[in-house]
Image 1 (cartoon, helix red, strand yellow):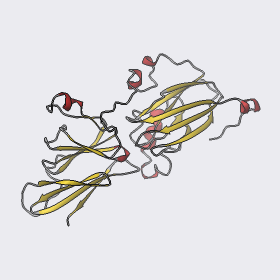
Image 2 (cartoon, one colour):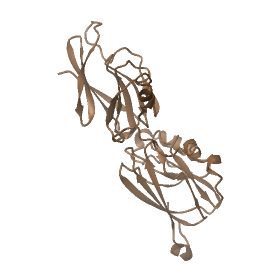
Image 3 (cartoon, one colour):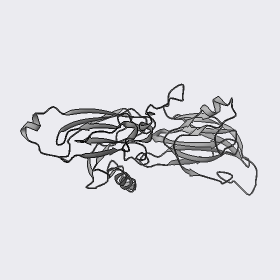
Image 4 (cartoon, helix red, strand yellow):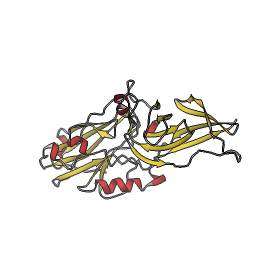
Length: 293
């Protein structure tokens, strides 16, 4: 979207704002002030291992825009997950990890609070902020236009992992709704799952943050890790696959790494089975591949 300005405006020094996308579905800058009809250079830097964008909307339209983006379905990737709506003012492309984009625009003439949000599927519920144009910002703890975590001063992402959280990674850890032989795996693109080695089956999958292991560590192995994202799939089916008519229990035989992702090996009714779970790229979801040599 382009705007024409006066020669005086064209010579004005723009307001420069840098916003970092970081782990935990967060922008590190959740609000900023700008003058009406003024130039802004907004640099979005993706420091996370998930894809992100930034979309500025008309006042009060953040949730509606995020919902319409989710409804794009298979068209979303080509549209950078930005819906064709009049309520969308400006937007960046979807940025891959370790990339950046400078968005140049002129703020609206009308005073108001203009939200910005990441419209990549599943991100908009947590990842947003606001541009205050010609109106004062309230105290942060009373600002309903920023995420709850920011109002509470909890904007720093906790690093639970000694080696950071470079995906893919996996934990052998006690998980909710799984046997003591649970394996938690964090894939790229924000996908996560719990695989139960005790029953040789996928228990559930979730999107966003990985796990908080502190309840297990604090309890000396008696607690359960906490799922940090949003669960979108789970199964109560006893096993992944059935081979023959036998009700024989599967036997877990270990795993090997394929591009950093575990390929699980188990034996079902005398047949060796290999299961590899990989992330989908443009939508929320995972793909399961079974191999029988």
